[in-house]
Image 1 (cartoon, helix red, strand yellow):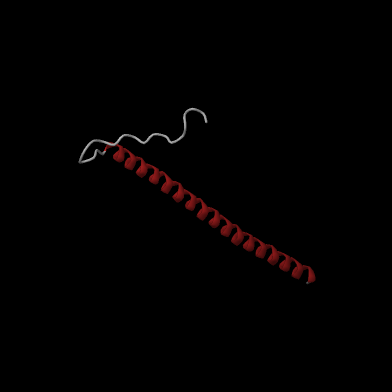
Image 2 (cartoon, helix red, strand yellow):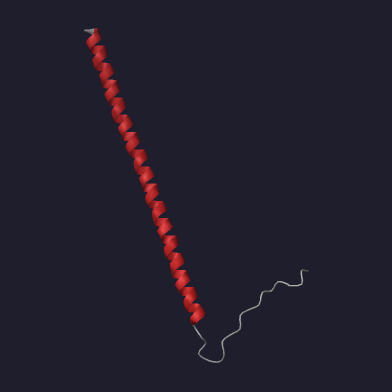
Length: 83
């Protein structure tokens, strides 16, 4: 009888271990999947921001002033003589 109880208890522990292992694995996988989705959304947001700013820059370069002449580009403020 004690052998039967030991087998049932051992089997119960194995089953409980399998359930706990499944729950922990599921939690870790869901966290990894959530992090992957977050990174994908962030990646997409940066790509869309770059596309938007590119269009805005193209528009800004194409606009001419309504009154007067176009402004000349601002020169670089660094000295070119090496000092």
